Amino acid sequence: MLTRKILFILMVSTLVLAGCRSSKPVAPRFFLVEYPSDPPVTDTMKMLPYVLELAEVDVNPAYASTQIAMREDEQELQYFVNNQWAIRPAQGFAVFLEQYFADNRVFSQTQTRFWNVQPDYRLKTIVHNLEVVRERKDFYARLHLEFRLETADGEWIERYITDNRRLLESRDLNLFTVAVNNIFFEELNYFTGKIYFGLSPAE
Image 1 (cartoon, rainbow, N blue to C red):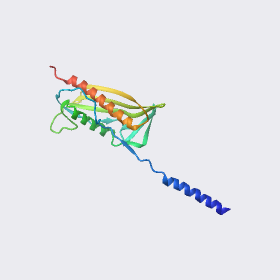
Image 2 (cartoon, helix red, strand yellow):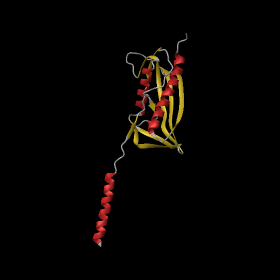
Image 3 (tube, rainbow, N blue to C red):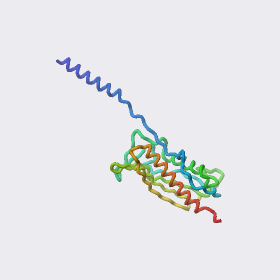
Image 4 (tube, helix red, strand yellow):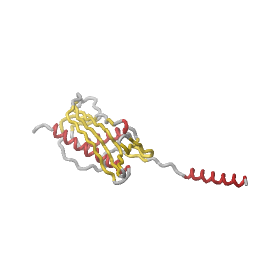
């Protein structure tokens, strides 16, 4: 009788161990903040005779790591375990900015650093919120941004703050990433138009 019990326990243990071995770990997925491969057509602008420095992008520390955040309550953030940014958002947005101004020659020169040239203006980008927002059964991409155009001495010329939320068709981080990239492009393009017309020499 005792032998049967021991055999039964051994069989159950073997099945449990086999089940554990057969379960594969979930492969991590990585997402990118990046310039759209097929960006929308922007308004044609004549090149301004100024030099623009792109300051380092400042991201709220709650969103600055490679972890992707989801807000389910007003004061509560959760982070996806197996889904992350491929690079930190600050780096992604910085490359995005460089690509935008390379494609749209709004200024005579645009770089992140100048060694032998004194920039006329500096563009400061601040990301206050970068998150998936859950409201009941709906999911939104939220990007709360601030752009500042400053002189080389730090004097504000133009400031623009936007808090944009876009409904996602489903809880899909691919859709979230596409929405974030599109929002950033649209808001950057809008702000660039504002500063372009503000800085354009009077004819």
